[in-house]
Picture (cartoon, rainbow, N blue to C red):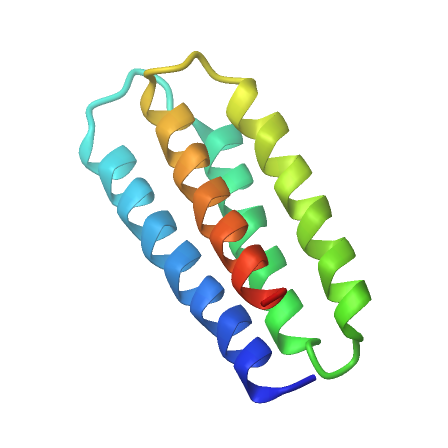
Length: 109
């Protein structure tokens, strides 16, 4: 795998982590009656998936990385669609989806 593709995966980890950090800060600063643990777990799973994908980039070939990214995109669509549009959770999942989609396209240039 060339360095440009590894950089794309690294940028993806950074971008996803930044969105995740901001989302969790918003949740923690809100005065919610019930903590949205399922939502936070989903965010953390996306962060961990992207990190693992980056860390194992030299183990996988390009086709395997593509398959893993398609799987992540599919999961993010499911997560996003499980929330009402215009809610904060939907917007966060949509942001994560956009990051992965953009990086998927960049990875395959």
